[in-house]
Image (cartoon, rainbow, N blue to C red; front, side, top):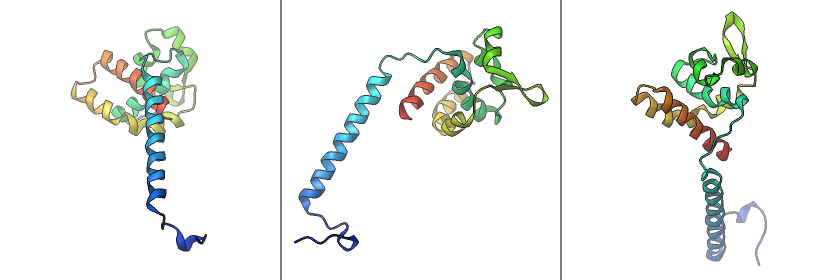
Amino acid sequence: MRRGGWAWYGRHSTSDRKTRGRTLRTSVLIGLVCFIVYNANFRSISAGDTYPARYLPFGILRYGSLSLDPILPLVRQGQPAAGSYWIQTGRNGRAVSLYPVVLPVLITPLYVPAALYLQSREWPEEATDRAAQIMEKVTASLL
């Protein structure tokens, strides 16, 4: 007869361990399939209010700032009038995001491999834009 409680924790039969291992593998496989299916179309989110969150991690890694000034052309996407909706003027006249910056700050470590790649290529604007689109979708699917 098996006893309950912490004293017996970790003492499982071989069949229990095999079942847990099989369950874990199945869960990881289902998660991986969902991740691949979600990212399979390679389309990015096209709403303008996502641009500050898309590019801010690169701005943090490259310039060490939450200001959008260094990455303003990327964030505006060539539409200065449209950019005024999601870009506001902050202290000292700096461009800042209208939306909260907590999530872009938290996901910045996920952008490090892409930033290292871009740094090796000297940050070309077109490659930075494409990397930001990919990273936006990948981090959204991870979250």
